Length: 173
Image (cartoon, rainbow, N blue to C red; front, side):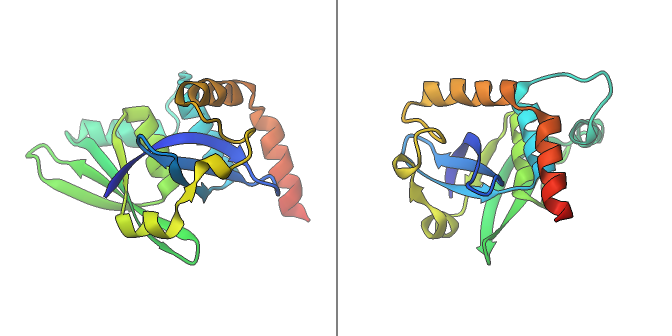
């Protein structure tokens, strides 16, 4: 398995959200297309904004922690017909690992919120990876610090309501 990190969130040519993941210390990565609501949740997690009442991900985190478990890692373990499959690994109070089937987007939001590692299966990575330097410069930069700053600016300027209106209009067609 290879550890990956969130490199960015972008919109493709059809304005569908894409999460860009990269292997640490390389220029190799891959994209996972996610829904608009998942993109919104990820953008909110990256922004670090606190809300007066818990959102769904916060409820899940609070429940896991109240039960004495902890977040260990997420694994993107398979891809079939361009659909990625992931699992969330938790540790129960005795240290036993519990593996839960999960969507990659949910794992990413939780990983951002709880700072745990994300891994990708070697075979999935070999099948899906691209050279990130070949992406358009406005999607991904070549400098990790610039990427982080660019991603933060993208999130800060993200108009969630406009994104919702865009996808609602597209779904009604």
